[in-house]
Image (cartoon, helix red, strand yellow):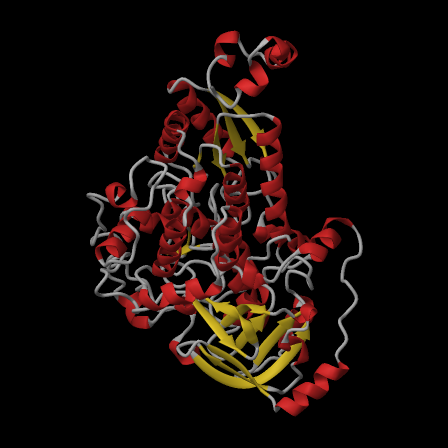
Length: 581
């Protein structure tokens, strides 16, 4: 019996069949397995403007394999466009709406299988959460990454434009040479050349890579460029493969096990992915009934070598990683080094070890590209970058590209993209510059009121306090563009973009609105950041902290009506994935 039979078989389902026929379906099509094609297509997000073509390819694959595809849509917010204004408050909360809407549609219409088509930041985890909740045979195919742009003979991306704003603001010459408003206009026209998720290893591409590592997508999902015929062929294969999943009754919770999440974390550490994964993977795991505390990230990071440096940590982009063998090649290195669960099942029907047979990295890809020092990497790496994927026994570092920090400022943990931090800022102690919100911090940065050695604290930006835990690429990019990213640390109870580089510590938990210690920091307090030691400490005597605690009062809710008010009332700590309780 097919799941869809609940809505199409038997005498009493004649009215239901009548409605199906109203859509143009034939009895023959209705007799086949019904496959929901969950499409995040829209006309405003560059990562999504082409998903209609991806969906058509998926539907062709479903038909080739004998199924009937039926598409429906979910929402999607472009974090780049939402950045720096009220719209960013809605970005992380949209993850829950995406998960809920997909769940509603798939329960209201009992599909036999599902193909999810996400691409950008919150859409990928939102759809993964829905797949885990529904536990209907399903797999993913993303829209693929954008190609890097070209400016003055250099590969550029969205991060380059954000940082160029800071260069123009202070009249500083950066890695791309002199930058003024006219040159910035030329750069902004070139940086994002077409459709796809932004070209670096930012949150969207990280999550698409980790979907592959989880076993929920076919090889190539994270890296095959959006504009290629290979991306359309991958979509067709996904449509064909979902029919096999339906026949085998292979369900998401059989794939998304504890071992699979540990594999995804290992890949995350090996490629130095976005810090946002430390929010999203626990949320997806929660939906799958798997516990995934921050300690797991910490432990896996400590034993996983950092093998790949892509923008913003290095000079390369997603197309370079794809040319070097993609995520399967990264996983092959980890598996050979004993850092993967080879027995984890994948949507291919094979175990991870079986799926990786014959996979290897390309030592030729990306060598000798003549990139100048910059982009947050060591000069030696840029002058001779070597292979895109380093061998397991010759990594960039012996620990992962993301670090979890602990201390009195982060009792429940904080996160930093260690692979994008310069050597001189791995340990730093300096005076706090305290700002209640991103706007106040931006004003101070552009006014020149943040100096070398400072620790910028941006608080009341957490899941509850923001609300919505805004992603703040603008302050980190401004500091980088002004040449301060190797002299100034930032920490926040909010989020930083996957495009962020520098000593930018986020997800400080508990957040300020919940009474975390970050709420008690005052101007000039000494803060110590020790990434190798995984510590984040506020150096203020306990009796003074007790006095401040006694005087502190929680602020009034920033939003009192609408979706954000409901979200703020129910959202959990970032340390738990900012899930709704």
